[in-house]
View 1 (cartoon, rainbow, N blue to C red):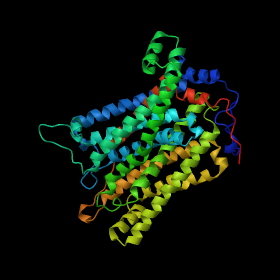
View 2: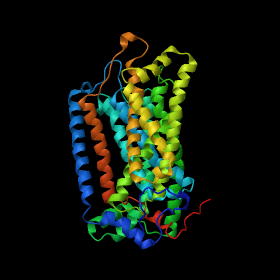
View 3: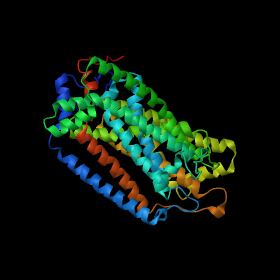
View 4: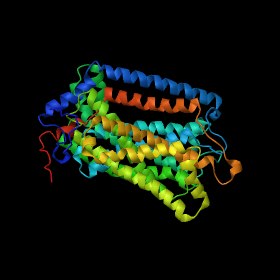
Length: 459
């Protein structure tokens, strides 16, 4: 039943959503066994151990930051934003693919989302959690974070509603809330399945509490479908609005390289681009370690590669439009910024962005490359790196040289910047490993609906 991952071209239209030969029971057995088995594979222990060490590194870096202050970071007078805002935008972008896969593809009746939507939704929650950490730490006094909310204050302290940083608080908190509800509601039927299959009383009680009395009646299914579609409808506009609001952090500032109307759609496309790259980065090892090649088939990888290619072309178009607008406007400051990006002290960052985000994904035009798992994994890693460097380029290169040469300076992250960033990756991976261990990584009930469905015909 498992397909080969070799270099043969993928005939995507003739490939079923899951490999044939499965029954309702076999689908349930294979997915629930990942959670209910007493011993995870060795790869899980190794991965979780490394991620846990990185989380400890994060705890140490944050503790030192709270004790000493943000001066341990590399931020200075011209570059007041450094790794913190770069990492924030990068993590928020990664979280976009989960909502797009779950909500938008659900409303468009795309069945290929079924095998990847569950861990993509979890990826969204964990990425948003990692993202939200950085603006709080950047405040300098993160214990006063609640000042950003319009609560009744006897001191008369109210947030500045004209600040895009306050807009971020509302946008990201709304996105996190709706994404969590959408993820949890989708889990309820599978939690009931784990409750009924658990042999020990402790997991039976745990999953039974989370299943909230689900019995699979027609009444339950009707209410579930209505709630799931409503949440999908709420989550769909958030894909566009959240990263558009994040782009306002930059675009409302009168600064060369930031003050551009192209930023909202450019940021949204880049978010989906990096998000699908992260989904592929997680899906490929997951299907190999747990033998899920029959569920996460080459059709899924092929479709994700096509989405990456499409959004990558939009990002490349954004790069070209930035250069064109700077030339066509005749603005000497915008023209200097583009020249400084390409040939200034951070030129290596710019050309690395072009290599990772524009040049490397062009090989995805080839069906042979899209059917090669190792090549897809390498391209996904390159895109993740390139999108982080793009955010670094937007933040640092725009700030380090502005209107007055007397205010120019250089920026470089310190070891504490890198430790906090590495620790956030460890936190993300640790949460993913715990999710894989204790919750179904693939939607059981949605996959069972596709068991006896014939493969779509080509043409």
